[in-house]
Image 1: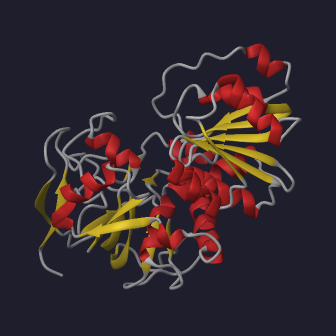
Image 2 (image 1 turned 45 degrees about the horizontal axis):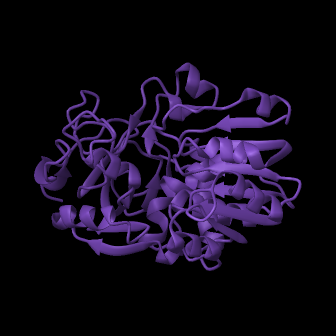
Length: 365
């Protein structure tokens, strides 16, 4: 290990990402881990930052979907989230956030809402709490902060399959657990991006009778079929009352549960219209939507349960990785990552990712 490493630094929207050198930390604080990055993928939230839709403190090393190998441990006998003792050379995934473990939210089981939260790929290199600056996946090394839960990866999982799990899949595990998808349920999934595809697979695994998914892109709807969807609806063909009628043809009593992963405000009323009395609605994709215009009477008279989640508890990443081990042959997880680029081609990788030709674009080290 040399004294310096390279990382791709984002400064502002409209400006190319630049490769810069950083010092590799030689000493680690207690419970920290130095990781040599092996693979990262470009998430939609990274693109939101690059395009100026999501405001972040800069300079910034983007990338939170990351895996790598342990290069150095800040403490002996560190354990992963499964209880395994970590050692140099272990291949690991980790939560997208570090939390303090002491605040009100950490103590009630919401570490993702920690008052001192630091998020990989979303925290500035200049943050005073980040001594090395290496807290993003688009770099050769990542400094894993104390308060991060890591998981040793099975050799059965390739880099391409494992890397996106700590974002989309772990989040959907949380969503499905929180709202409840049960055997025999009729499920509506709104949005066929990676969140929606994972929801189809998890709903199928839970024993859902019907899995209806909506989107505006035919190729994504085709992918959804391969991830367990039983019915697909293109919203270019069905809107408003026509959409309600189409879904009621499949589920005359209404759907048992609907899960939103599309980020569109109008999705809420679409879901409320087709939920059965006593139905459940999960909102998980509306990060920056326009305000919702909902008639509360439709919620009360139908006895609806509406919940929201943001990110996940570390346990959900552990469940996600085990799910991949057991189901990567059943669903086309190996095909999620399209083109793969070296770090010095990061701007080309971003352009390909913007095209939405692939569900994920990879960065390999």
